[in-house]
Length: 404
Image 1 (cartoon, rainbow, N blue to C red):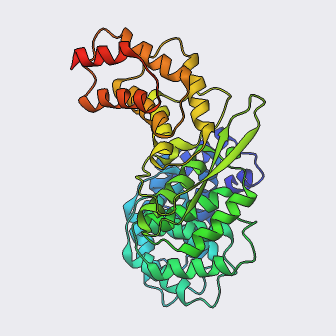
Image 2 (cartoon, helix red, strand yellow):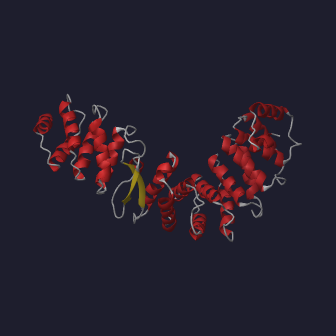
Image 3 (cartoon, rainbow, N blue to C red):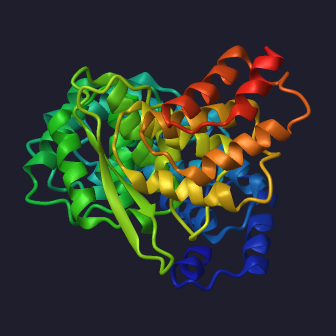
């Protein structure tokens, strides 16, 4: 009954709660077939109706069975998926299912969704089981082809192995080779792409050809600004990890930069070939959203222009955007000494001598009651920057000298 209601999108919380109470109140669940148990948990996991007692009752029943010979692959994967989906922690049922699956002679009766949902569930529930993961990996590696795996199946599989910390280079190369054999990646969503890259980079397997294919697809077919924050960050983290893992540093990353007041989005590419740059703050580069940068705090603004200057990437747009934003602020009281120091250093280093921002920052420093919060490097950077930018300001130099 509950499966039918959920299936047609007619979930009824009162009905679901009543059914759960009825099942929990029973002395045993011996009359329930594996399909019944699977359908019930699947319905509750998708309905949003919480019932820990129901999950506990079903788990106790399954764990108490002599064996799971009557459970088909679909039943196993659905039950595991349901527990993981709602966050019901129950190591006993995961161990019972793992022992059953690992003990099978083969996994030929498991389809691609059964396999991917099973490892996804173990990874999501944080239930480590090397034997199970190895069993699934061996089956996939030996498969003649992976054409039955759709983009979500492929994504869930590699994501699960990486998330669970189950290193299996053979599996990752097998999946990579399959993806590379595809004519195009149009069926892959932006989230699929970001999670696949994340999985490979997190596992320490930087498959250059795969990264290039995914990158080319994202660059050509995906509007980066339209991605949700998780997908944006996943893409950036993936390329960041790849950057650290690859000695060639041969990846290019597409960022979106909002410049025009009419909300027209312009993009630019940062090339990192042979750049010796710590890219731990790559996610700060994507300046996306409104025409103003109010959502950026002082450290994020500093890190952004600092990184462009450090990478020696000539691009006036981010500097102009940051300069305009800072110049319009009533004061710079929220900016700490390091933020101020790094900003003027970055502008001078990049050859971006925006008069307004230099005036704004020197007025703030001169107006400060004391400079105790500035380190020696923090004081050196501004005076170097003003000299480099040929911005003469005797008052600033005198104040710094007097403080030192």
